[in-house]
Length: 115
Length: 108
Image 1 (cartoon, chains in turn cyan, red):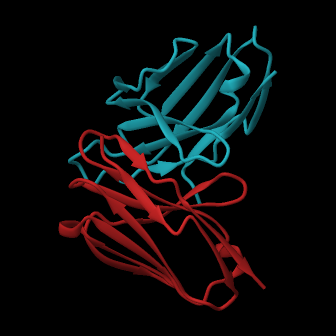
Image 2: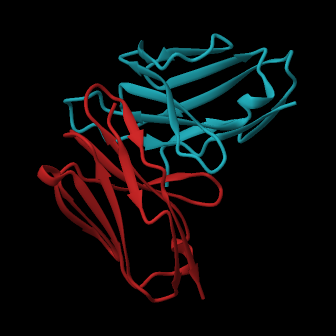
């Protein structure tokens, strides 16, 4: 069972569209993450939020814009994506490092197709 | 950055067989997790094990931090164990680096 939820499960969007991915957790975690996973590859970190502040941006293109409105929610706003951005987008959460162990828990993912 | 190598890359088992998956890492870590990714993409936490040994049912894991490796043991494998097994390590902050994974196929 996962306590990290993601919506939508699937998303198809054109290159001129604007869409958002949503992630929610109710485990009291104060760190949240976005990962991108291409087919047959491991997940790759995109962004980390710690205490609602962006702490890591892995040089992600500006067409991906993260937002953390509160400690339970994480959004990823998408604009002017390219077909190569098609992937599984995974959200995760954890306690911040040093408090209760930094084990990360993942949501079920959003499968994004850019046409 | 830290390197994470998993072996074997692919593994085919007959139902009921046992297996050992290995994860080598190139530097000291303060986080090591094993995940199972099912065919629908869900990453399921198996173990958080930066050091020591843990067991959960038919699965167990051992991390020898001083020698920079971790092992995942699967006993009496079932077809539902099929999928990709990832080892992921963290050194500082909250950044996890994943290995390339081991694809496991269990045949009935």
